[in-house]
Image (tube, rainbow over all chains, first blue to last red; front, side, top):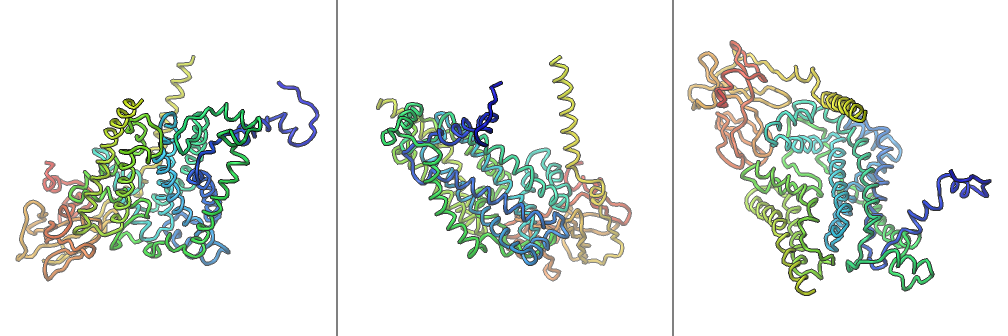
Length: 411
Length: 157
């Protein structure tokens, strides 16, 4: 054990006991970030702040929310919205943040795809990131059930029903998940538990892993350049800040990040205070009624693309379910579907560039048609877009293999 | 030593998982509420009744003489023919309503139609309305139990 001396202040006292100064260095002042990045690299911090907003607003909602089918609807729409002072604030912060966090997750994710930040040592960052997308999706879905309105109920009915498509155990599994033959009180209470305890716990754990996974391979940069972080850090510490290709996380990188964050929060608070309705489906202001289905059922915007893949195979619900299952895990495999060792932005990778924008365009088409009723021509457009989605991922290994061949020829 | 500790820990973990699984199971009160018994004797010919079974609407239609019979879906109780089905559209889960004048079920959501036998005849529904498990007990229909008549209809026996 190290010798404990009389401390000359609180910082020193803590430093002798928990190595505070070393910890600060490792986590902040000597955690090196490349200079050659742009505002798109700020999305991680934006996400961390949005998650904090969700936790804090969630705590206040939880003080008045009642997870019981007879009380839930009124506890949200009457107690929280009418009686609790500033209850509306927490609800709108929570609902708008839930929607916004998916927008930023998608940006974060497609920035990683565009710049190739998912390969050459960064696979674990990608995997934990996709796990976060999945746990956030589960949190979004379970939270949507809680106000117990018509959309809450029927979204829960349709989504839990999906598990019925699993061979052999499907039907039993649906009843097990719901705790009843239909979506009922047992379902609401257990999804409440998932939403406020188990999923946030899982999310916090995976966030820690996600951050940790960055330490060894480091943050990627705009050109996919391989940096010698130790050498560049030495330059910076020696005072050659201009020549050095890296900056410390704190205070240099964060000061830029906080600017992007502020710009984002202006938009976020604008939505919260003046346009919160986009996150509030009017159908969900009717209390849940198991005997009456709303004319159209559709998920929140961020699930529309996968919902459309599910519906796209309109002639066979089994095929749709298989495609939906593939769509939900295929992104996890991206580092292995990309067979090329090249780490560079998409605009420097010809075939990949086309693939990337086709994927974005296809996801936009799927999202738009996911909201429209699946009748007539819409059903066929949905079908073609779903096939295209699967075909793109099937084609990726071939496109990148060709690129790898060209790259080795050039070298 | 390590093996013993690991073995006992594994048994404990397995037992915990089992308890967790069972805690998620539907409660006994929920299971016992999963059966609905309907007395068919007071029904008039051509009359349709909707009962609730496991939270879902189930229709029972006593067929009149002018209605077509379908051997593959009708339920024979005594000398009468009944059409029984879960009154949920097989397209997207809406509840179609019965129109006695045309003897069809029409779905308001996307215009799907089913005939008096519960078979899809028009529009997007991909399959006939589902037949719930039932048992015939004298003049009573017990929904939720698989009787021989049900097994015959779904082709299991």
